[in-house]
Amino acid sequence: MDPLTANLVILVPAAAITAAFAFVILWRRGDGGGTTGLSRAESWVVSIIGGLAILNALSCAIGLFSNAAWIFDVEPFRVSGLKYSGATAPERLAGVDHVAASGYESAWAEVMGLPDASRWLFYLEIALPLISVLAVSVVVAWLSFTLVRDRPFVRAFPIGIGITAIAVMVGGLGSQLAAAMARSSVVEYLGADALVADDTTTPATESFAWFSLQLDLAPVGAALALMLVAAAFQIGTRMQRDTEALV
Image (cartoon, rainbow, N blue to C red; front, side, top):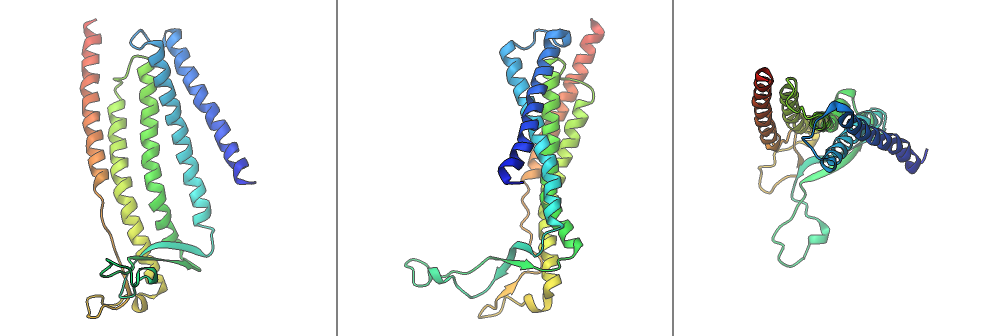
């Protein structure tokens, strides 16, 4: 199957699901499922957002399976981003004005017979962010449905946002850690004794890094923001419950 046909096979049903979702929640609104909290135009906007969230969640789920298919079957396995340092300068920069020094920071290699443990780490590098986005998409679709029905403060929703916050943090940090461990396992598999050298000598020797991790803490900030949103929805849920009790 050519790529265009494959994309159509995926996108056409996904678009149908998106349209069906928007129609169903609008029908629920017009069928007594909601009140007059949103105008018709606002309901359409919220419905489209919810449908796109469902579409995004579906694409993430497809990505989880499609990435597994090639990561565990491809041979040789192309490994990029291997941390590399040394004295060799890029030829294109030799003699260029204003360049005092140059070198390489990474390398790639096509590896034969890569162990399954390393392949699992490379899969986690891709899968964990997809799972995070999948969780966020499900929560957005859920919120759009409750907004159209004029009941956004349901009891389980803050719990769902809290779980999503954890998924975002674990997915973001775990993906970075899995990437570093995956490349470290490749260096170990190829022979760390031959590839890793002391790069503090003068002059510097060319060497691969056995383990390199530059941690980005942005997922922690996103998770904390989502936890605050969950707390706000928890307060809204309590207020809605108290209001209904008074009525």
